[in-house]
Length: 243
Image 1 (tube, rainbow, N blue to C red):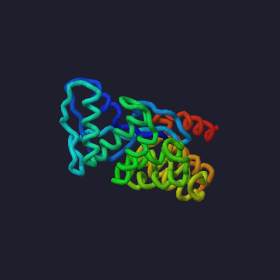
Image 2 (tube, one colour):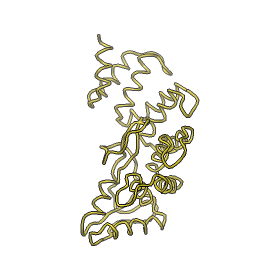
Image 3 (cartoon, rainbow, N blue to C red):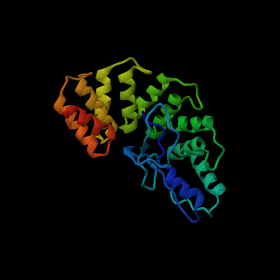
Image 4 (cartoon, helix red, strand yellow):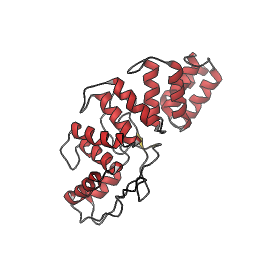
């Protein structure tokens, strides 16, 4: 399963620790990209959403072009000011800071509060991260049902990691009633976006006939796609299938 999504961390580090910088916010579509930086592993699998690139937020709240003289205090103040105005990405980034304990004392409770505000405003990355907190039991009592509910909100917006996690929960029956058909559907959506882990999971389901008709050629094709992306599990499964 995947864990905390932190697409803004690298850009935010630039904001907080370099002089004369600027930063921006957007309501981004969150396909997966390289993790930055790593966060503690959880029972959900780790991954990160894409880094925002535009200079204005879709809700009209812009964080962009905020100059700062190089101090962490000034950068943090600018972020908090934007968050106070309801900027979803600023709320999300503050959640990341409190989760990681960077520039602020670590507090999973405050991280939850910021993620929850952004999540309720419809920010998919925050919805996903709030699901992770419920999955991990950090800042909230562990609640797999709530984790699944927030994953689904992010998943329907196209959040790849949320789609994978939701598929895994339906496959195992954790947090939701076990439903192999739904598991295959969510794995399929994540696989269509290029998620190698979802390709492998769906490949296993086709190999075993779980939730889908058994189809060894299709399983092999999924393993091959994931293996080409460097997924070691798929490389192993492909070798076993052809043995």
